[in-house]
Length: 82
Length: 151
Image (cartoon, each protein chain N blue to C red):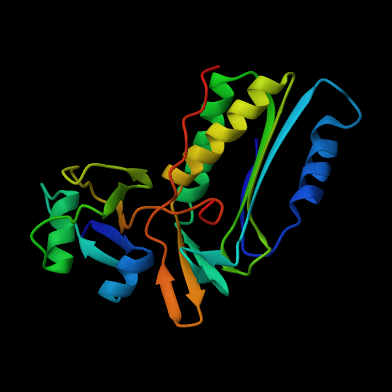
């Protein structure tokens, strides 16, 4: 059974209570569909970013078997609010 | 063009000296070295900050830092770059990020150093959680940067 890996980071991981899980791949599924299925929400909030295989991607991106899909809040790296 | 994500504190100026010696030795083809060091402050948004936790996305972070440095090297005539970024538990006064650019002339060094730092802040997957006397809070956005000049 082909699998996909889902990841949450930072405040999203705290809010939803998990950081990584695997799910069965389903033909035709998109990144946004995974978010909705896992969170019960009807859409992707404006302040949630997504990545497919470690590259930023639009929510409508198709998912293929073996993909790693991540959701996370806006990034805040670099110096401390400099 | 190394990038490094580290959980242990580092001394930025020792890193600059060591990398410069390792890459260039005594040869003097670089005329300009631009160094940016981001250090953790003990205040933010009017509150005293005791420390913070920096989370990242292992793998994606390094990939994007590599890409940011490669892009800068395509835009300006750079001889070498070095990026080091802390993750994990950080305390005020510790270095968070080091960006170093070596080039023949100052314009490329200054402009590329700034561009790498701005791209890092907007694209590299890091997240900060501050520790205050009253609890913790996620930093929800970066301060606005400013556009680098064109090469």
